[in-house]
Length: 80
Image (cartoon, rainbow, N blue to C red; front, side, top):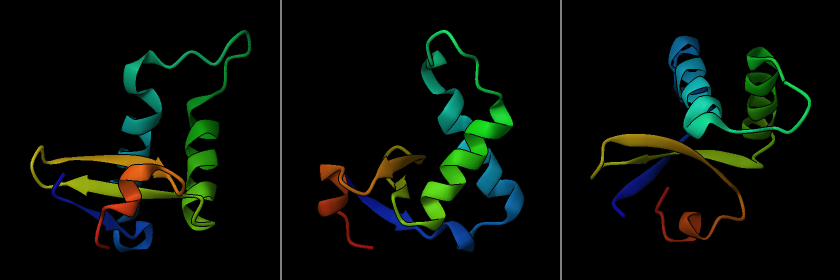
């Protein structure tokens, strides 16, 4: 993987919201019986980014971004 981490605070508010929104709506994630509003999901991910529990990763090869938990093995192989 030819990827880099992107500091969340280096993105415009619009771009950051777009990356997070795409991430939380990916694959039609099922959260069980309770439906969580989109804005709540976005806020939860933003808290994780700010606390460095999660990171935005951009893959140059596929030209896609994702958000990974700090313990994800992929992060260990990426040069920030």
